[in-house]
Image (cartoon, rainbow, N blue to C red; front, side):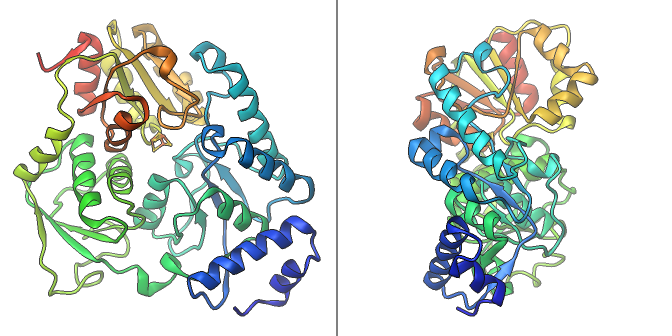
Amino acid sequence: MRLTAEEQKMLDGAYGETVKRSMKVLVALGEIYGADHMIEIKNVHSPGVSYRVAGNAGLGYVEDASKDATFRVPLTLNTIGIDAQDWEKIGFPEEFARKQLELSEAYERMGAIPTNSCTPYLNGNLPMFGEHVAWGESSAVAFVNSVIGARTNREGGPTALAAAITGRVPAYGYHLDENRKGTHLIRVEMELKTDKDFAVLGYFGGKLAGKDVPVIEGITRRPTLENFKALGAALASAGAVALYHVVGFTPEAPTRQAVIGDDVEPVIFDQAAYDKVCAKFSLKGNVDFVVLGCPHVSIVEFEEIANLVRGKKLKSALWVCTSRMVRDLADRMGFVKDIEDAGGEIVCDTCPVLCATLTQRGYKTVATNSGKMAHYAPGLWKLQPVLLNTWECIQTAIDGKWGE
Ligand code: F3S
């Protein structure tokens, strides 16, 4: 691989052992994928920062790195394993919380920005079209590649760390024009109205495309940021989609021809396909737990939830997961009080998928508007899921049940 003089200095150890080790990791990665040079990146969004994912091995690795390295580019932290302020109130175990805080502090010693969120683009890390970045967290990667048109591969914790320490990534994968074209074509033949509809389309597309690049045509109404958030999270979890295009609405797909050839046969997403996905997540009866905020809720979603619960009393537990920044804004607007008065909990920094544990709560069933949460809930916590839109989720929380 061709390295610049500066990159060679990093590899030769001129900036210390951690920088040297990081550059070695990236060179080895580049050689595996046939990269012939490095690319300078603007920023990093680091996954693998929940202690439940990192474990003691990850904690030791990051603590070691923090002894002699700092970040060359800004790095925001993904969702961690606890609410960093209210972990005791929520009931996360003390030993886990202590380890999580040590891990977060090690990142912060190197300069990490403690956003603790899977929506860094709502919390100050908003790349521009065409910029090269190194992001992890599947839903955030899908968003930044597809909706913004910045360029990243799906980084893991160690490669994101190495990228932040060196400010470089090897030039391969979605950093290159030739890998950003579509591979599968989906034609939408129904109207998409709610967040659930976009989650269901995402689930369908993820199963179809796997780790490739779906192109979606036939959407007639401009999707909102929240719609894209729901779509990308489901694409990235039902499959491993890191980049998708929506013809007419995402920046690299002004036309179908710009992203996929004319000779590709479309797969149809219609009411029958929609119903088939919904049938997988169709629990009826008592619902213990309702989760909104996967990915973390925006201030717009916060307001919608507050309007729906204001003056009501909830029978099911409700978690609204978000970042601390968005929560603080919602607090100033009175939305936190509305939700807490109804009996809901605002959970910052974490989520049911990455948190320390949920077993202490004994839930058996979950309602959510997230395709990603519905996908992971059974395997992670043995929760039977039902996928609903936001209004239906809140109605379920009020009634304590769905569909009876
Ligand atoms: Fe975010 Fe957790 Fe969902 S990290 S996308 S809320 S699984």
